[in-house]
Length: 110
Image 1 (tube, one colour):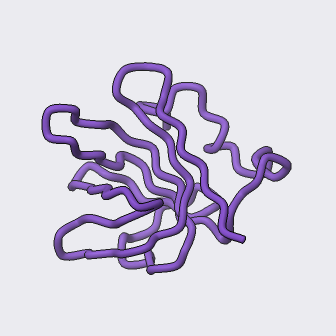
Image 2 (tube, helix red, strand yellow):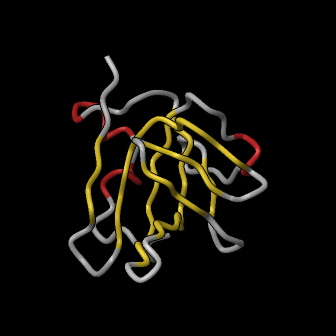
């Protein structure tokens, strides 16, 4: 069973999403997660499941990610500001093991 969660943030145009990478293009700095296109830029930070920095080349198709970012309504783009590589889908009972999943404000938290 494949499950996913999409939550658009309560404040501004921020969002949080957990999902499976369906397609990935490192050259164009974009990926498809849960049938939606997400981009990243030079300011995007990539982390592993422990919150340690990683490089973008660790991302792979059919791996789970958690993306915190902003939506550009004018362009319809969803840009990741923080992208976490997850070992699997993280359900409600396991969220306490991953502090970044419980951030109150999805943007500008370090």
